[in-house]
Image (cartoon, rainbow, N blue to C red):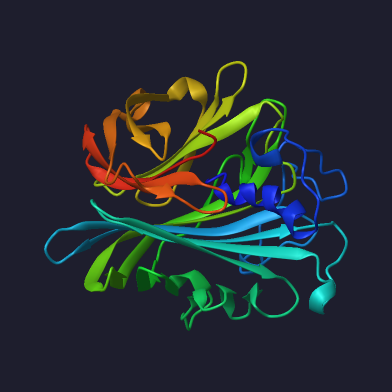
Length: 356
């Protein structure tokens, strides 16, 4: 899902208007949002409209990760995220009266290097935004936009970003269907009913150029898009999450997330997506998700090696971080980077860990 670190943007909103959100749940995300549109079961998704922004909801994001290799077999990871967060639930005005905050995160990772960058923008002035015809999501010169000529804008996309020590320009293509996560797109995050609307495109194939510290690479590999929007996605008791997106060598894909609590067992769920795009929800009883080894990262003990078991699918793998030091040293820091699989299935994917 990422229940996306994008949710953490809510912790920044007060800073934009000289007020601080209360510390309820991770990054204040357990605070009440009664004025905003609630997330309820039974929503009918509509595309391409739902690729765009959803006014009335408090937070949403467009999030892409890619697991890439160059011609010599060297592994890389790329992340691109655009977050939209509303300061109030009223219809948004134009110009500087607009009450929308946009935030961009981008990163690249190799076995030895991790670089991350961020951008901020106020809505209403053209510096950042999302449009649906043709689909384009941008903040400054960072872009995730369509190049497709047919009815599906996600069939052919351009993804690009740059920071002080990196840049990338990738083409993402797919012929497979979107995947609605959870219960037909209603993705529950707690036993109390907190939820988001959530869909993914896990079947992207990426190819293009990546530059790190002045060295340029031609790369290709699988990529994954997550789209979520919500108004109150966490409870006060939830301290952070561990989220996986996995590309298996047999063509299947797996999404898992574990919402950690101050008290009690984590909330655990996921989705198994077969090679045809058929999705099956996994509940906590079907999943064993266990940290194995930790590493000292930015003064924190982070679990960078995990055991994942889904017996009904004969999955028994260990994930290993390509670079244990994939720390997003941004205004709100977190860990995010590519992982590699070994065991019953080969493959790769991405891991995000927040709240440590």
